[in-house]
Structure formats: C-alpha cells, structure tokens
Image 1 (cartoon, rainbow, N blue to C red):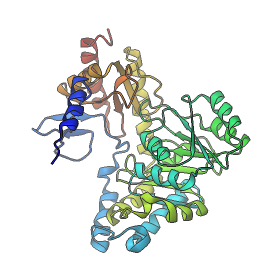
Image 2: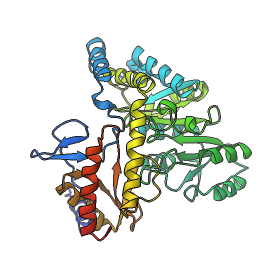
Image 3: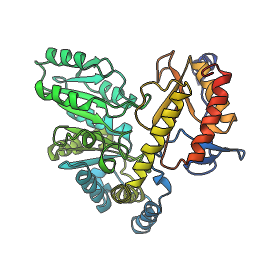
Image 4: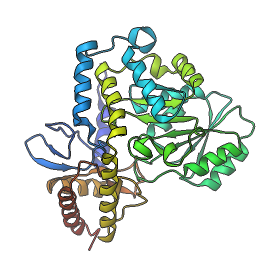
Length: 393
C-alpha cells in the first residue's frame, strides 16, 4: 500500500509557513467563558453564537420534546421518508419570518450554497460574484457549468460594467455576502439590487453573518435595507446566531420545488435531526419576542469597536459584531492569537489563504452574552499583547 509521504510533506509545508493550526478541544458548551482541555478558563471571542441561543431554555426544551416524540434522527433523505412534520413546520416558519413564498432547509450553510447554486445555474448562465464572498459560494460556483465573473469587493462601478457585458446570457445572477465574514463589513445591497433590476439580473444574498444580527428581529440584510420582494435568493444559517446547525434558502415556491428535485446537497443528505428543527423553530420565536438580545449585541459591538480604534488598533472595515484586528503576515498573526490565549482571551488567528498574505488577523466576534467586565478584560489583554507586538503604543 502506498504511503502518506506527499500528505506529510504538505503538512510540513504548512508548519514551515507558520500556517498550521491544530484543533482546540473545549470541555464545555459554547458560552462567553469556556474551559480548555486541562481546565483553563478563557474569555471566548471567536464564537458565532451571537445571541447566546445555544443555552436558551426554550430551545433546549424544544429539542428535548422533539427527541421524545420523533427520536434522535430523521431516518432518511427528505425525498424518501425524511421529511417529518417538524421539518415542514420549520420551513413555513422561516418563509413567514423572511417574507418569502417558501423556504428550503439544508444540513449546513455550506451545503445550502452548493445546493442552490448548483440548481439555478446552467451552462447558458453567468454568475457575478464579489471577490470576498465566502468559500462556500466560491466552491458552489465551481461545481456549476455557468460562466463566472468576479467584481472587486463592493465595487459597484465594476459590477455595472460586468452586467453590461453579460446581456447575452440566459440568466445573470449577482451573488454577494450580506455581511462579509472576515472583515465584518456590510454589502451595499440597495445599489446591487438597483443595478440588477436595471440589467435584468437575479440577486442572491448569503446572510450567514446577518441572520439574527441585521434587520428587525434579525431578519437579515434584505430587511435591514427594506428590499423585500426584490431579492430572489436569501441564504440563511441556523448555525450561528440561531444557535443550532443547518442552512436554508428563502425564495419563491417555484425555486424551492426545483431545488427539491435538482439540488444534490439536498437529495443525497439525511435531513436534520428533529431536535435541531425544533430548536430552530423555537429560535425564531425567541428572535421575535426578545429583541433585547439583538439590541445588547449591537451595543456591545459598537462600544468595543470604538474603544479599540481609540487605542490605535486597526479594525479594518468592520461595521458589525465581527471585529478583526489586522496583524500582518501569517506566522505573526497566529503568534499574536497564541499570546492572547495565554492571557486568557480566545481570539482566533485567521491567515492566508482565508485572507490576503499580508492581512493576517485575529477575528473577534462580540456577542450579546459579553458583559462590560468581559469586554474590559478583553481590552486589557489586547493592549498588553498589542504593545508587545508593536501594534499599539
């Protein structure tokens, strides 16, 4: 049997470049403070658990009751016997929440993009994508036979120029993140929609980091900009602010029906466990009835970002609870993250190829769970390590 020599060489190359990252094992569930293997307690500022819903009592109770009723699994893919009443209820709730005709749930946000893009794009179509879109969008596009055009990040002049060139295609689909996951900036969705309407294009928005964060009750970027009825595909996640796992698309009934029949990620994956579906239903109700969670999230994020800027940290283009601190080349960024962890602060290092080679960073996510004392602790750790690295004075 052949050996793993090539794989070992690739792994060593990652280590030599300072880009190797082992998995970190945590001893408890997602929370503001978490326990590392070995017992060390650290402040968690890398979690996507924006609203702290992973521990919400209504969601936990819903999961328990669904497990008692349905069991731990759905038993099949959705097109065979895996569509249970609770899955249907979740999709109806999501469609109502997002203001669309229909919604279709997938096993993750990643597979949602793969399934939707693969269903709606053919060889006669063109997809026009922001250069900083999420990896799941990039990979989803790669799996299609559509022509591909990339426009510079949030460059609306370039987007219009590309749209002008693409009039001969059967469909033009403009794809953007609602909130960009590495920089925490918001897409200029109003202008994107206006240009799409001018040039007869479809609009596709991935709201993974806007779900539960932007818009009234966390309905997302379409609601945030008041664009209901003008965005064709709203991709959402159930894995971040919603506190569980999964992804979905909110769209027309016709598009949903097409994806049920054509989306390979949907057709060949067992449906979500009933407990997860029940938790997500409960989460939608929590978003509607507890707006103070989103309000606290934004208050924490804006205050913390402003303080970091005053201290001299480079937070890039952040305008959401995603707050990067730009450090530089990969090895330095990962060492910065390691030092923060030694000081009791978990802020994950993000390096090339996820971001540009010279834009390595620690990416922090402020949540509704963080207290003033938590954020003060984080600031002191950042200032101490920042001075060591010459990032701040």
